Image (cartoon, rainbow over all chains, first blue to last red; front, side):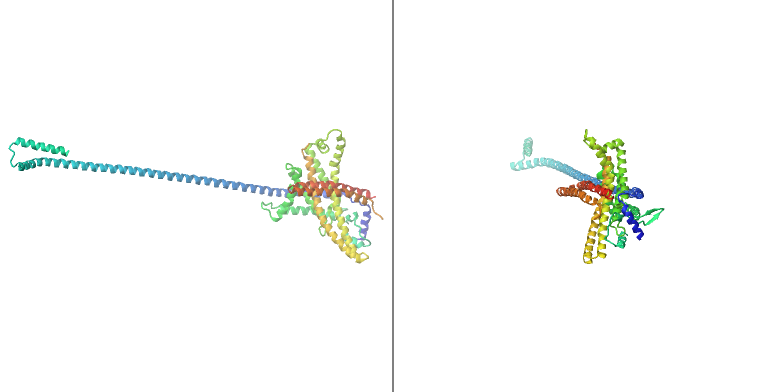
Length: 180
Length: 266
Length: 70
């Protein structure tokens, strides 16, 4: 121990700390070189990989979000389109129904009118037939009736057959004229 | 070791000086005596690689706590030092060297306050010299590869906008400061701060031990010794700040030198 | 008294860089106080200035060893 100390003390006199010992320089170069190679081979690529992956993950996340947004947008558009279509369809159906209703009404009205007309015309015809029947009946009756009446009024039978006939006919004609 | 030997001597007040950095060899291989800083320097590479490899190994997208710590350091060197000073085009090439140099210097500096080691390897002048040599080679080779030999010399020695006879004065000066002085100051700065820091800690701790145990007047010696010990602790914390700062400065200057050597200006 | 006069020289040589370092960091603090967002940019510049100023002391430290060892 003391020999060592003495040696150190002796060296202390001549040792200048600014004089590097070349084996130490070589040692430091070798050690640093090995450290550098190891760091370059294993550490820096690992860190860079983590960086790159993180960047990719963030960018991927953004891309995914954009994709999702796009999809949502598309779905919304689709639904809006469908809704509009449905609305349009409903409107169309309503329109059609309205039209159809109107048509039905028109048809019904026409039908009813036709029916009414038919009934009216039938009625007319009947009435006409009845009237003409009654007229014919009347014509025949009125003659005898009138002569009867006249005979009763006059009190005597009208001798002049011709005259009698003329009077009756005039009467009937008057009757017809008033009837018309 | 130093503490014990000084205590063993115990004849007068301790005098920490350049001799305190001459450690007795731990063992010898074929006539080359291996001493403590050399062992720990080698160990530092193992520690540095082991730490960052454990941090980087998984390289997960969502980092674990360990990986997050590693990324903090890596990010500091990659973005804060390399990219800001070399430029975003070329920096990736130099990141491995800058990162390993930063780790290497940082760990070797922190040996100075690490219990049981307490000797900053970088206070042996040979180690910073080796690092500065590598940095010097890298930035000069990078510059020559970028501009060619003559172009690089012109790039480094002729300042932008300088014309005429003033160049006669400027060119040698610039050559001196950019090519010759740089590696020396780089090595000396790291060495000197570590050397001085270690010397300070040594002074206060050895002084404390001597004052408490061996000083003739113990009524003065013991309080003074305790005070010296407390100041030593404070100095240790200051030294830790400087240790980090020097590792940062060394890496920063390496990046700056590379950046100016390969820049396209003028 | 024994020792090296180089130590005194070293102490004298420390004055200049000490003032310079103080000025640099004073300017840095002022700059950051005025524009806190520029902190990261200023930091590098401040450290670089600090390094350049410190370099003179380091050179003198080396010279102290070189000339003080005779």
